[in-house]
Image 1 (spheres, each protein chain N blue to C red):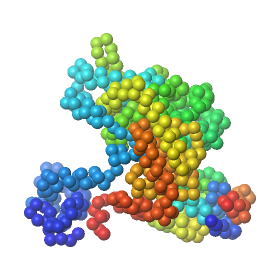
Image 2: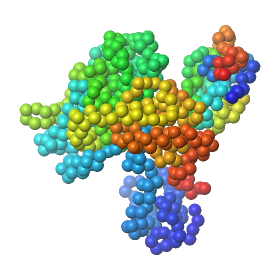
Image 3: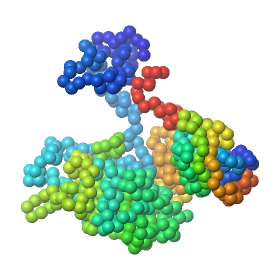
Image 4: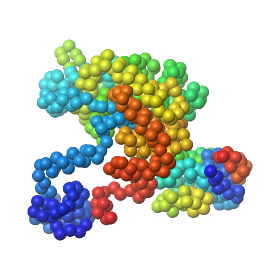
Length: 485
Length: 126
């Protein structure tokens, strides 16, 4: 970078307000400490000269400039508050600010490392959430500790492993349908299991013959999403449960698609032994970004002793933190991410039984209405809260990019692989008929665009088409490389 | 759309090819690279490892998908195409030439008889 150096307030005249241009001079490529040979510094020494400096150029803008800068950045981003965000299997739904208000209550600012008798309110809320989740999932016990959905999966499979080992049963395999979320495979592998992938039947559901052939005394668990990743309900679920249980295996429920079942069907009633809840999907807590999050795990009675310590229990003398000798190792400190759990509790309490039932009804109705309105074929059905349309002869990724030009976020593309040029779409319960019609219009307009228009898209967004190939082959992982151009 | 299917090698149903000489070269077909789209990463075993007929031996990742690679024939690996580490695009540009994956010492010649010849393979992909 060149320039005449900053003015007194840290800015160069006539330059745009841009974070990346603020580092000026030699400091823009600050060497790492190891590169400065600071590993030779003895504890107690004063900092060597090459690690100290007398001045530091910091931006010094006026408050309105700061406000405009961040507002501008936020406008360059897309969010569920900007418009529909029908990312299939991700369940991007609106987080009502009431849950933020509850979490911002000064009474919610409680440090977890206190004696149980001094935080009875906190423990009461956690016990209440354990109870809500157990009732929603048909489970007997819940741990709120896992800090994300994938962590919940891992915790659940670790519980299964502990259960089998306690029975002197050293099983080596986890069965997973080919249509499952990638995290399932990673979870099983991380827990030390061999993954056995089950092909899908022609109707898109679990292939019973393949399942029966794959199940054995080595089967630790079958991991299943229901409805599955193309929105199909596994209607043979009870038979699936029998096959797995007869072989001594456990049935794991991936809660990613629980949104379709809320208040209507419960994994526990279908025969599932373990499940995780994606509170950011189903119960509208903040989504993604690396956390903090929460992915509570529910289990049937027989597995409860293996859940991580401690859990909250209501006793005659109030709420207590209880520990089990058979528990797996902790997966997070204390009870997990407390304020995220507060938001999930607030959401469930605010909606109540009727509200949750209404949410799942609208989630399914909206997906089915939208699929009816669009020109794309949907090969598998009847589906519930999401559907995998196919872009046919067009490239799904190009159609998706073109949809950005029509002011909506596109669906998930090219997954699951069982649908060619898949566009996995989940509008969720939050969209109105008007916004679903707008979304359908964007689908059709993108599909009806010329191949060239689709290939050039998006043309109306802040960032244009990303060169995915170069990004993957030659990634630039530091803002510093911006200055090398 | 027509794809290049050279008749000097044999093909596995899952779109890998093998030359019939010794050592044998292994790669993926023109059709496979086109289906995958831009290849961004190829994960291969090491020299000295053995691979088995119709069993996965590596992974090819494109911007669209991640796919397992299956061994057309069994044998011990005598060479790995190291160029793919920095230039995975060779698989797209020259799938039958510079985009080869492995060279192996075939342990069982009879496995070639289980593979498709160019005509049979071409019939499968049209």
